[in-house]
Image 1 (spheres, one colour):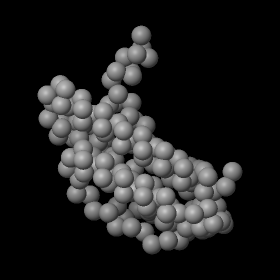
Image 2 (tube, helix red, strand yellow; image 1 turned 180 degrees about the vertical axis):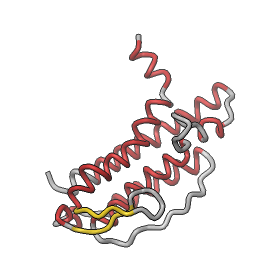
Image 3 (cartoon, rainbow, N blue to C red; image 1 turned 120 degrees about the vertical axis):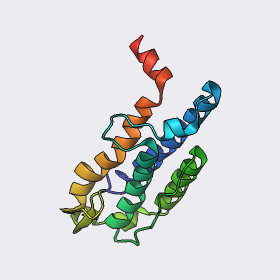
Length: 162
């Protein structure tokens, strides 16, 4: 499997699913008369970041990860989203950006040695591309996607427990 095939389609599919979950969460808020800020500010555990920040990070990991692995220009995306619509726009923008990458840009990326932002302010990780993809970038990307998807899908969770 190519480096491109192991990264870009996963980012695109998962971000799309995350956007769908936000649509369902927004509908749930309307149906149950819940202020959207309640879900957008929800944390799975007290020391975790709120949903809004987790979505922003997922978008950043996908876009900035692709840019760094291909030695491209790293996009600047300020965290200004406050609503479900804002977050869905950010996801849509991330998907559009990630789709601009072509397989040829990732050739040799598995051997690229470099400094990669760890996801925390001013913390860098020195590693080669394959290590970033396999152990760090995917886990950092998938964590907010998977955990919040589970937390904000109560109907699916109830069905599995039955």
